[in-house]
Image (tube, rainbow, N blue to C red; front, side, top):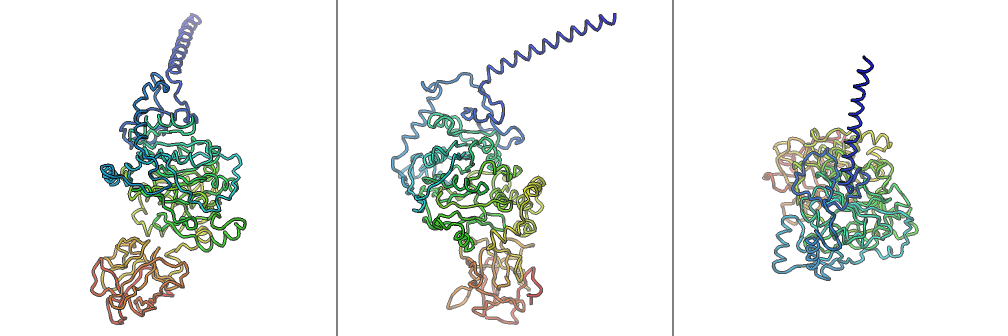
Length: 623
């Protein structure tokens, strides 16, 4: 009886399993018939690059933990491109766009101008997005540029072997015409055998032109597979979007470009040639300026260019090539003109650079916990140098870039992503020098959004990277450190009133009058000064000089410092007085109010307005 009982239920279970398998098989057949064109894995993402899916106005701040790649829906019916079925509206729009372009306008990189209503429209658009989109639509996607390279570049033979490049371009609501000009320019000026693909990564754009119309243009105007569009489900920001593009790339070399560039002829070859020589070199072209209003291509000539530096507040800046670097070039570039010799750069701007694709991943790619935009360029710069690589400017490679006066879009939740990302960088790479960063950015010292950096610290240990002290001594020795080799640093405060020296938030990259303001509670960037052991009164970028004048008041002008301190004006700190050695006059705030410009006057040992103290000092030097 027990045996028959078990046999009966066994048959029922067997029948149920067979039915379930048959049901699943039918479902699989249905999915396969409906979704032949759907990508099944990240590695096959290139197969849906021509997705016609519209993003609409989906919230760009939705959950970023979802799959970052946008999967296209299966088409109910494949349109016939040859007959124009379902594509006629896009073809008509594109032909209309091309008809608006004025032959020869802006050619050779010359400034271009509109008249009448078009000029007015361009001016109004510029106020909104810091770029003259109206004028851009009148310029050819294939407009020509003059050859701005050093004449010696034309004589060079570049041995790139069989290296190929993938160009990765991130865009978010970029003007359609500007983006397409970037793509056309890259293809027109880069050797076709070297350029394997251009990968456009859409970081959640809501501009309708950047969806189906862009896909159609790429499908019908470029060779198959030459230009790939990867669409992200949500807006992830520049850093994560670049990682998504890099994962799709198949070229030997990654070249990252911004979406508003125009390249000079022959810009690719020197980059690949140098990477073939040195795979751990990260390369930057000379970045020229394309005017955002008239699209004029501006250069400083072929002999003059700058390299990357940084400010202690965590911002990138441009600096002149140091004498130390010129001496190094003389040693290593004996067979070529020094003007076209690869030039070491302490940092890079980060928007445009080339790197061996395998090395990119080996050395840590990007910090994926950095959000939005900003800080990633200094993080990569310090990491490359401290972990055994080099950053080099390649003078024979030139790319023009549109620099806008302001960001035309907001970052998610209006967060200070640049500051937060930079704080993450400083915690990992700057060692004790992080204290100088926090003196400039005290608001970030305990910011809750900085997050955990343990995995990046472990990466540094794994790669056996050098210290930030090594970096400053060997790569950027000319960088001024406001707390080293100084008599005193901090706020320069009046002994008898709540008044401090202050740069009044003026542009430190140009000469300006030094002022006074109410003392901040702690050291702030505008009130951070140092008196060096060479007796130079300065802040990070500027040195204090006395205005040349026949009559008082004699004001203090902050000017660019000379690399050699012997050429900077000297100050003596004695008896709580700051005396300008050249004139013998003393710093004096008599009769001044906050916001006024500070001045010097004849020294008076009894004057209360000439008595100053500085926050932190070397006791052996202080009065």
